Length: 296
Image (tube, rainbow, N blue to C red; front, side, top):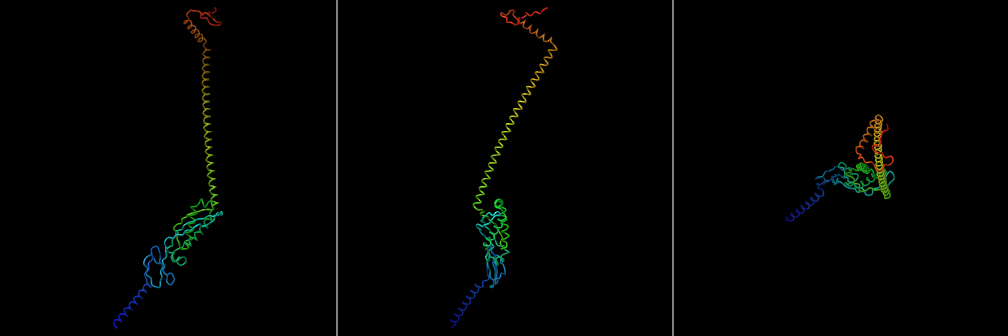
């Protein structure tokens, strides 16, 4: 009998211990919030607290939900828009975002229980893209792409803030117009390049012609200057010769005796050199030395 009583007590203890263990497991008060998350504490479905990373001890009537605040990514493919001049345009981009730590309770209550807002981000991005591109013409959208990206970024940040998300960065992966418009743009670029080439060639030809004209004018001026110089030189020489003749004539006119003296000196020189032989032939008009006898 004693052995049976002991055996029954042991069984009861085992059952009690098992029930306590099961109850302990069911009512386990220890929870862990991983790094990069927040713990949303609810009491009968109502949010009553937000816990940081680490160990959390809660009573049985409270529940802990792990909520991610890590960076998330939303890929938007071929978002469509239209420019102010009604040109269709598409964009594909990637938006990286995270939940603001002070908005965890609001996001958990209104939008997501785990921090995933990708569907909201996609919708907001497409709406933002349409609103921004509608403010630009197609040429401006191409020429001011950096400003367009900044406008999209600013508008999307403001829109996602409504959902408690903060934008980390936006990566535009593709940005394109319709094939027909792109072909027209390429054709316009080609024509513009050809025009610039033609203008440059014309400028080159004009420069070469101006250079040739300048060279010809310089050569003509040089020839003209040389001719003027030669004419001036000849004029000076002629003037000097005329002046010399005038001086000689004036001297001869004023002093005929000097001329006669020179003639006598010449005749004397001839007489000194004569060998006394008369010429065998005398032509009419030829002078005969020493036969000129002054008439008395």
